[in-house]
Image (cartoon, rainbow, N blue to C red; front, side, top):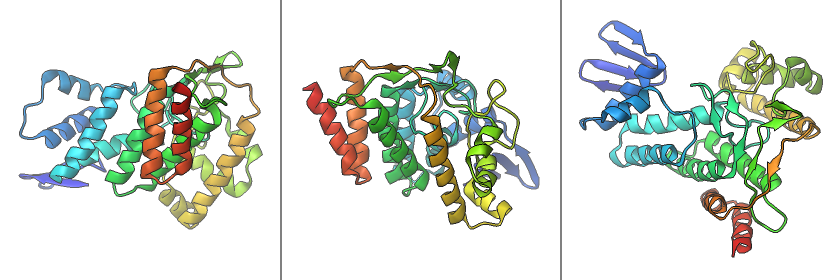
Length: 306
């Protein structure tokens, strides 16, 4: 996405600002500041909002999610490329980050860094209910991006597999700890992954999720997207479709192996307000993505509450 204003040219994808023959790369703070100024022009941006944009929250809160959806809708209404880019970029970074469980689906409570890479590994029902609704809306508003559909599918699968009680209600949360360690359920070593995958699978999975880099969590590797499938396809000489197929088969193998680990604790309270958020998320996503089984899940939860 390139936006021109006066004699300046703002390249949002490359995080660069150009003027004439000169070019500078923007750091994260400068990029966020310029993005909001472009999306809100000519309005004056309050000091508090500037501070929050320069030092963004890592919590996934309802207010932040509402802001993202508002930006997306406003960008579409005004044909404002900057506003749309900010919303889509935020959702893409969250989806690709380690805050998203790339094997089992569902988002962790918050990230401890600015890259959405390393989360506090607790998963909350209320966060995921809101995120499911947001990504479903974003899929409609942002030209049906495959990534947003994928997020909805994985999140909904996780909800029905791990968070829905036999009588229909949704459980409250999953703990961060298992086997006495935070994140132990989720992290890997390259050797563990290589032993479970065939050579072709490992060749695409390792660069995709950073297993060819240094450890990113206490001497182990937490999955975070470092390379897109197009880049992996080009580097490996494979078709993008073949890369996606290998990533899917690798994911299925690793998820099956992870299910054998000592599981984290689950808070099995069924809270009305949190269930309401997930019922809305499942119902909305099921309707927008034409997945009747998600709607059925929401109906079962609603019937339990009644």
